[in-house]
Image (tube, rainbow, N blue to C red; front, side):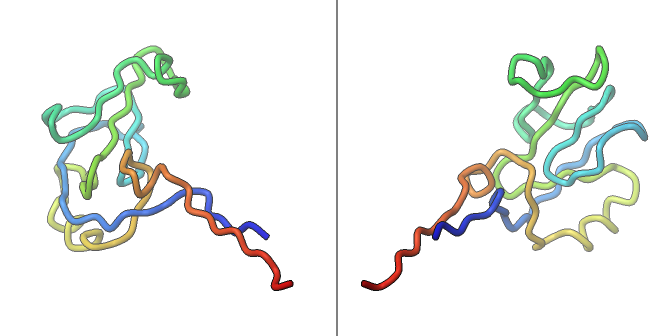
Length: 111
């Protein structure tokens, strides 16, 4: 028998603030939308041309940003509320080894 999960998780503790419109996705480890800004390229992994990474493109100006390490993405407004609520929680959707490597175990019956 093989037991596995569809993805891993990571415990997040560093918020990264972004500015985005209402159409931007709500995930804490990645955002996709038309206008995402207010961060530095060192804080998030930015994908300006989703088709190059075989990601879906919602419209002509869709972009993606992914959290790395133990970061999570919050909006500028109500930032302190999001920090208190999500700090030290387990999340998925970013580009860390813990999230991208699928854990599994192989169990064999005793003979």
